[in-house]
Image (cartoon, rainbow, N blue to C red):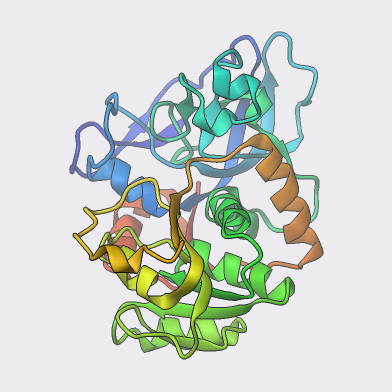
Length: 327
């Protein structure tokens, strides 16, 4: 197999050839056809997440076909097309797993972070966390749904029934969630980096009723806001933008420090909550919604060997929509 491997924090990925791995008990070997590039991959590469065991292959928005099946796997067969998400394994026995909150498992494994991921030609997956995809749709177009879409969906659910919804950071997740929200009949307000006219135009093309800089107040009070950009200073900005009783959802796995802000921004029963990972039910629910809502991802495909350059484009905010690596 070929892989782009991170050997130390903040270093360039190294192209390596490795022996093709064998699936163990309850596992699948998947030949990868597409892997989306997510902002969380940047946090891994930049060493911003704790307890990374090097070397690691990043990537967790994986689409591919089952090439080999390990022992005790009855859910998948060779040739099946599957999607592999960020949450790659849970213990199944902790209090969270037993109470339907497997996204908070005490002993999880995360694809492309604590187990090898999708910047490669092959990967090993826990069969329980490989979603059947069927045969409809293009592999590259589907890949961003496996994290940007799934985490976006979970954050939208946690935002509640907000009619006036703010989206801070209009990248891969934002452009997917905006389409779902519009399909649900919500009014979407998109917040981007100051001066990013292209992203604002993109948001309006997807049905946003307003698009502007993150520092600007929206034209009407928001019922809820979701923050996808990993920028802590957006938290007080979003709290200012939501009405009394409104909710701000922090959707990223990592965020810069949140600055101090007056209690008056949180008072009047405003809520500040975070989203962590996903559950398999989130995947089942969202993939059904994506089909019914006819979600269309804006993607840009790149060869696997361009992974470093693509991460650089993502870091610089030079991508509209989502980047996808194709082995």
